[in-house]
Image (tube, rainbow, N blue to C red; front, side, top):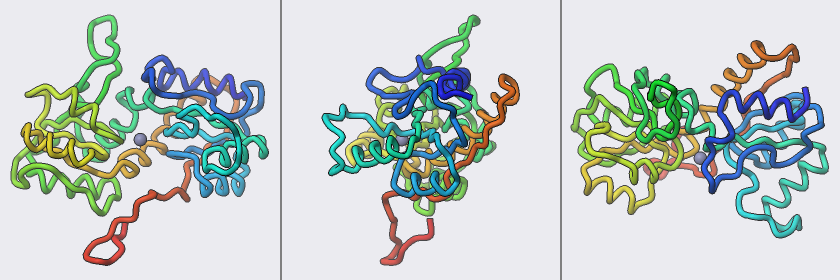
Length: 278
Ligand SMILES: [Zn+2]
C-alpha cells in the first residue's frame, strides 16, 4: 500500500477536515508514492521511537503530536526537531500525524478513556459537526456517565489506575460526588473555556496550567488531571485497532502495525522524595 492510500484510509477513521486551523496534521515527512512498509504508532517522534522503529523495521510512523508544528527555518541538525526530521529523511522514513482530527472523534483518545472507566458516552462538550438528524457526530470533549456517583478524590484514583498514571491529581473538594463527566484528553484549557454550567459535574483531562486550575476551582468546576502523556498515549493502541478494522474492510493489503512500547513521558514524578512507579 502507498502512503497516499494509507492517508485516505485514515481520513475514514478521523477526517482530516476536522483538524483545527492552528494544527498541522497529515503527511509531514516522506513521499505519498512510497510504500508504507510496517507501521509504528506512537504519541510523538523521539530518538527512542526512531530506534524502536529501526529495530522493528518500520518505515512509517503515525503519531498523535505533530513533529513539525512551528515553521522550520532550516534543517540544521543543531535543534532536536531538525535532527529528528533529518534522521527520518536519511533513513527513508515517513511520518503521518493524526492530532486534533483524532481528538474530535468519539472513538478517539476520549473514547479510550471512557472505555477504561466504563463511562457510557452521551454526547460532546462542544459539537463540531452534526449528522443529518442534528445529532453530534464529532466534537470537543466526550460527555458521559459513570456507573455510580463517585467522590472526586476516588474518581482521580480510578483515573490514575485506568491510565497507569501513578500521580493523577484533582481540583475541587475530595468528597464532592460526580456522575456525569466530560473527558478531554491532553491539554484541557479549551474544554474549560467552552464549559457551560450543567454540561457535566466534572472534567477529566490531561493537564491544566496553575492559573487554569485556580479558575476551575473558583468557578466550581471539579477537575481530574491524569497527566498529558498518560491521557493520550493509551489512545495509540485504539488507533491501531481502528486501523486494523479499516484495513480488513477496505483493503486487501495486509500491513504489520506496531504500537510503541519504548516511549516514556518527559516528566518523572516523585513521591516523598522517591521515584513514583508510573
Ligand atoms: Zn497532546
